[in-house]
Length: 246
Image 1 (cartoon, rainbow, N blue to C red):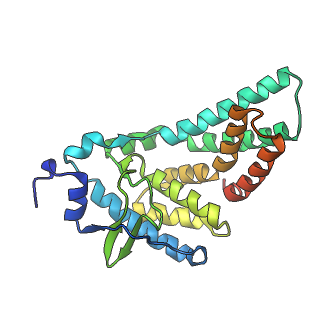
Image 2 (spheres, rainbow, N blue to C red; image 1 turned 90 degrees about the horizontal axis):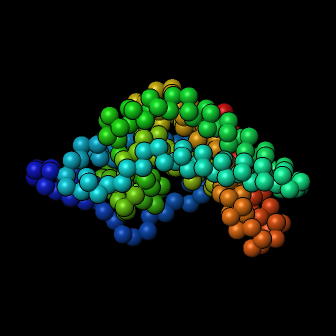
């Protein structure tokens, strides 16, 4: 094998028997089962184990996103609370504000739960120099005898938990009637993580990211569209976010 310090990330991936593909690799919604998701967890784990050994010259170009997701969510909560405070000062109260307050409470509960052992999880991730794929969905990585990957642009330094959160969030938007607690536990076992990681994933999977995204758009866009437009978008987003599992 070539000196690992002199090869690109792409070369390293290919040396480790992973093939790049360009053609579409799709999976229909009805094909997404618990078994299918667990199989994908094993594929994600194989990629994680390969990536953690990379020390080539591209290492300096790989983005470090450790902690960014939690900070993004905290920022959304702060923005929403400032909006509510301003509305109260202007004696404004309506169904929109009541709904926002409901989701602020859910969002804060998620962040409180995620923060319980957050510092220790961050320390572990940084110590082990963990890398995430960024995009773990079926259209980007799969296995058919050998491992295949389409896009490596989203590979970054981040906690292993984040790949699970992003992957599960995307599936929850498509299919909500699965045993998410069981699936998260399976991921923890496959990645050899602990109960603190399990609680962290549950908390951030429960965060209403789609709803908060639309609240944020309304707050920033103001009267660009009627408030009813945003309410309809938020109602649809709530279905995608599903129920909290904490």
